[in-house]
Amino acid sequence: MKKTAWPAALSVVCFCVYFALGAWGSRFFPQQYMSYLLALCYGFLGIAFVRLCTHLFFDVMYFKRTGREAPDLLRIMFSLVAYAIVGTIILASILKYNVTGLLATSAVLSVVLGLALQDTLGNFFAGAALHIERSFKIKDSIKFGERVGEVESVSWRTTTIRTTNNSFLIFPNSLLARDLIEVFPYDGLHQHAVEFSASYSLSPRTVIDVAKKVLRDLEDVSREIEPRVRIVRFAESSVDYEALFRMKDYMKVVDVKAAFRERLWYAFYRDGIEMPFPARHVLFERIKPERRPQAVCMPDYRCIIDGIDIFQSLTRSEKDALVARNNVRIYAPGECMVRKGEDGDSMFVIGRGKAEVRVSANGTHSTVAVLETGSYFGEMSLFSGEPRSADVVALEEAEVLEIQKPSIQALLDENQSLAETFSKKVTERLAGLERYADSEEQETILVEEKHLLARIKSFFNLSGGG
Ligand code: CMP
Image 1 (spheres, helix red, strand yellow):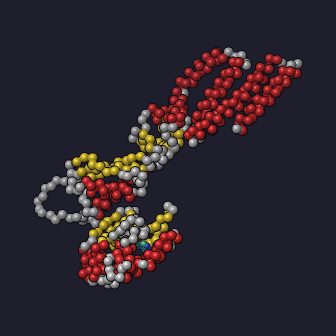
Image 2 (cartoon, helix red, strand yellow; image 1 turned 90 degrees about the horizontal axis):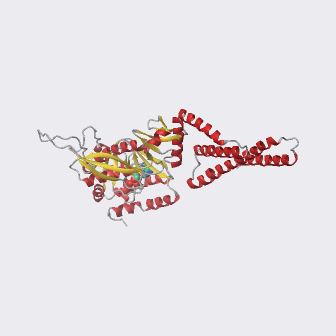
Image 3 (cartoon, rainbow, N blue to C red; image 1 turned 90 degrees about the vertical axis):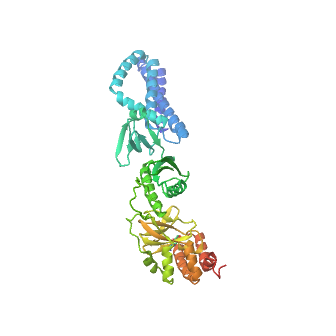
């Protein structure tokens, strides 16, 4: 409003001077200059009027409708046109200029300028159209032909986008206004598809369930809309699937697809699902199909079990059975092996790699413990039947032996005193967790500690359980 006040004030002053001179100063102020003075009065008034309109249109109405600042380009264009109209009216009606002649001259000038600045003006108006139509905003990602990037800035001549290589592409606005662009709004979800293949021997339900779980566990994939997985074709050596998922930041799509493929390999491998490859079944001898590729060297779980405190009192054959009856699983770096709050009826012995036990509160993670090869996790839920107490995330590729409830049940049926050993260990770990819990959770932990032994006994139907 300050910008409007001073030309308005000047116009008032000019008008006062004009009327004063009209009444008393005709003797010493030549009459032929009075019209110039009047033009000056209206000139200031015109400036005040244009500024007031600009303020009302852009700072009030535009802002109210769109919730955003009006682009500078629009303000400049509006002001230029409005000043030209005000100037023409003053010239024609006060100074009695022949504006038709002036317009003819300026039309010739405009043609000359227009031809000289054809491209620049084209870009200018294209930029204005992009602003008015609000085709895209800063931070949106756009795809133009083969080029993809995040919009960094839109000037009166060019639009700059940042590519995934962190380089900049600068497009003349006229190019963007003319051709087809695909816009991925920064704050909206968009769907993406990633193809993968699975063997013919697997039922589509199995593959679809595994792939969906992998998608759900990926950090950047939206949980608002459930991912979908569908068959796209029956290929020569595989069934080809397409996983459809939604996410916000388009610039991360390639990374998310790569993470999906990586995690899928691990998930398939864990479940003993073979990745398909071009197959020619030319069999010369009977071979025993290997469940797992040979490249990975298997840790000696029997030896690892020997070193685990809670299994110290087991007999040789019990330890042998523990290894023989359970399966080995492999996880990708960063993959969540156990998620807080989920039900769990198995525990894991780490044969290779490291894992982090973490709890989250208010969007921040706290590390409760880092577990190395030879350590174990997941026993708290397995022994007590409670939901998982923390997330356990693989810090590097991790291979684990997953011990299921029936194996522990068999041990406890043979030797009920094991329940006390288990209860002691869980109590120790609960105490470690207590530090990271809020007051409500701490109370639950205390109650849990108190009744732990009874709970284990009742969960495994042992005598002395509640
Ligand atoms: P569970 O509750 O089944 O799932 C999360 C696992 O994190 C839990 O079992 C333990 O194995 C592990 N865990 C929880 N607290 C600790 C701790 N203080 N130290 C080491 N491991 C823990």
